[in-house]
Image (cartoon, rainbow, N blue to C red; front, side, top):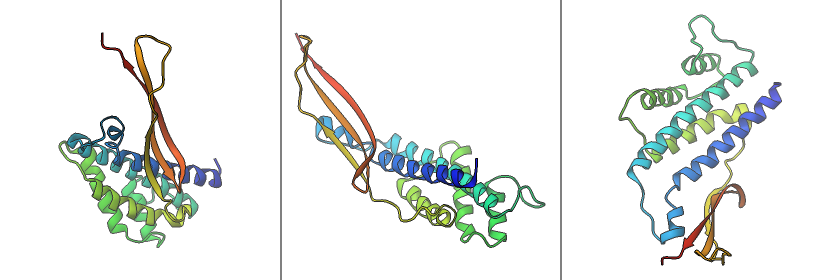
Length: 196
């Protein structure tokens, strides 16, 4: 794969990650479509940010691999391991990367989340890490300003059903808009059955 295609793939991977993050942090909103109220789930608030944090570090690693290739550097060189730690160090030591200390903190936090049981992160900590990674990767991918992302959810009115056992069917959808345009969407229908 040539550099331009690889760069496009990584830009798209970053975009999809942001869309999924926006959707995940609003996981409790679809309940508003059913019962007009919502509560956060402590289990999901512990698991989702942690899983996304690990994915964020993985994406950072892929982008730094691309940057190393772009700059004509190579791993492993003496003193550098072929891992995220080595990639951060080789780019920083060749003056291609700033704020490596923050990236090492993200890498260490990822390691804690991936390898220590009963370790989790928060939505706020994840967002701070996303902001730092975004600043880091901008020079390599030219991703520009983050688009305005907005969760949405909708439900239809009840529709008649030809099935006599079903009182009505309701359609639902939720997703994320990117600069006002639907970029990620999920749809489902639910039937209301007669209680005889």
